[in-house]
Length: 212
Image (cartoon, rainbow, N blue to C red; front, side):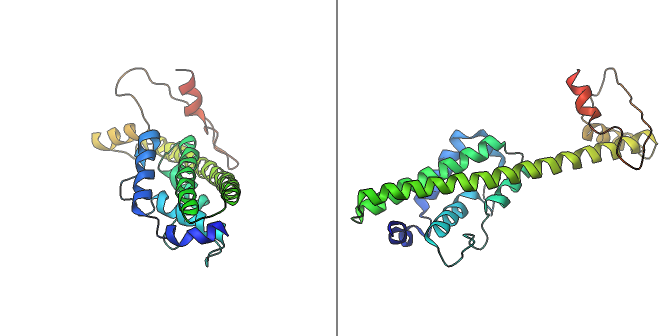
């Protein structure tokens, strides 16, 4: 009841709330710098709407207003932007904390029973745990996919380089950059017989990197 009473005042995600939260995210979380400014899928406004709709039983029972991202989509997108998982979780915590502060002020100013306002805090931070879990799973899944894709690209680039399909210094230098090879020094070449079952060199780059 308390949330339904204050939700209309917060439904439009007041600009001061969005600006304050974004400023805090960028100040406290280095990984937030990887999110392009003006990103149309910026997490803040969408997450405020998501939380309010899902907690109040708004008209969109998915809690996902048009154009915004749910926790799974947010997790996958942040993995693609190379935002560390820790920063993703901290961003949710900060977003919920800022929204809670706004809800608390609006509810108490509206004459709500303080005991009910405390119950609302429990609901909001319970939802934080839920959306964090969904976002973590999505971030981990997408990160694993990206790792496999990167390994496959490395293998294809190596093959093109070793079989002579890359010609000219420009193509070779670009391949070296994609493979993260030094421009000078000693090199190690590893060869293995390929099978139809699995890539025999999967993970070899990571293993060699660990050994210097």
